[in-house]
Length: 210
Image (cartoon, rainbow, N blue to C red):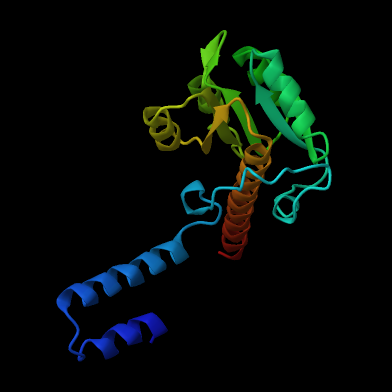
């Protein structure tokens, strides 16, 4: 029997108040829920300490979130200052930044190159982040979409997550947050992609054995 569950049963005979037992039960259920949550879900991750500057010698936690060298990262923004900041931020990482100023430019890149993550401004000259999301959703290994917006409201956060986006970034960008969020997005994409390929192999093996 799991240790936490056994502890609850053992405590049931003690003269504890009902409130204490209920509170302990809630704590146990919360621990179990966290243990079953898929890895790298934004809701389960700590917020990075923005007081730490990530210089070319990146912090250890950022290094562990690094993809293989020259992994593509698409940045979609009509603002030159956004692209300049992103280029500088990811210059000393394993990411290779691809730039798009419009939805159409982003669509061209997405149709030709496989990538784990996309940073996209909420509003584009010829569309919105939703247009980009609708295109990434039909790809074989959909990249994780991170929507960038000035002073994002709660409604945008909820909409992005509910429609299948990965996260929301605040503009002006914070370098530490960027590297952390994109690294987690890659880990989440890599985990889902590996699981999908494993399931495909299992189905193929099963079909060949019938």
